[in-house]
Image (tube, rainbow, N blue to C red; front, side):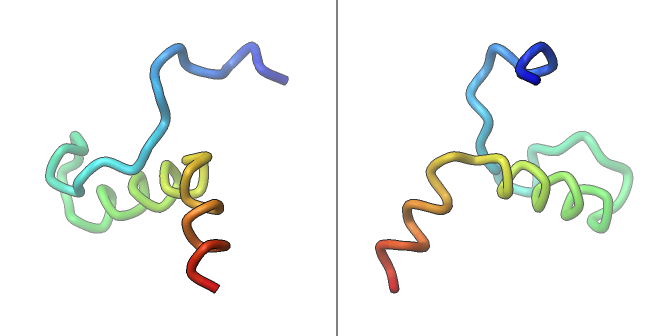
Length: 48
């Protein structure tokens, strides 16, 4: 399960930092990394 896990920290970067040819492609990568970021669910739960 964890063999594909990268060694670097997964977090949603600013959309300008994604190597994409369109804003839509960068937004897709942003959404995926946002869902994988372990800090995001904690922040959302704290806001509720």
